[in-house]
Length: 114
Length: 110
Image (cartoon, rainbow over all chains, first blue to last red):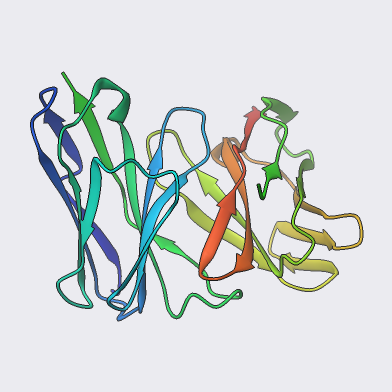
């Protein structure tokens, strides 16, 4: 089945220790998104790729970086995690990013910062 | 700032009743509207999408859109305990971006 996969599902890191979260998709979608979701809050878009074109949200901290080496994979790097970065990180894809496109979400990675 | 607003709830309904979830949005040029269901600790799952004014039905779910009032709703008929979750309203205003509301928590009481 075509799907969006995130690894790991749970990640524990120490304050200031870099961490990388992974997302892969078998849908062959052009657009990949990274969201941060904290408890009882809306998913917050961090950035997205349209193919290789990177689009950063204005309020995304510099501590968050992303890479998309090919169509299938996208990575979220947190260079120096702080306690406030503990959250669920959601990867999503859409076919072309058109207004009628549906976003399909992966299962998420729950990040804990100690 | 583009906003999507939802009542956070919880909205409690008895099993078998109709649950009505509401959402308003601020960006008049928004074109597409989505309802996602999110169970605790899980990722959002698409329930319905709607693009035109009026009603769209899919099984027990009906989405309603009124662009003039900037209002979108989701009705769940014959609510089941398994429908207990947070329902996120999402609005696509174009440019590959979707804005989510904070969600309404629904509790279906057996």
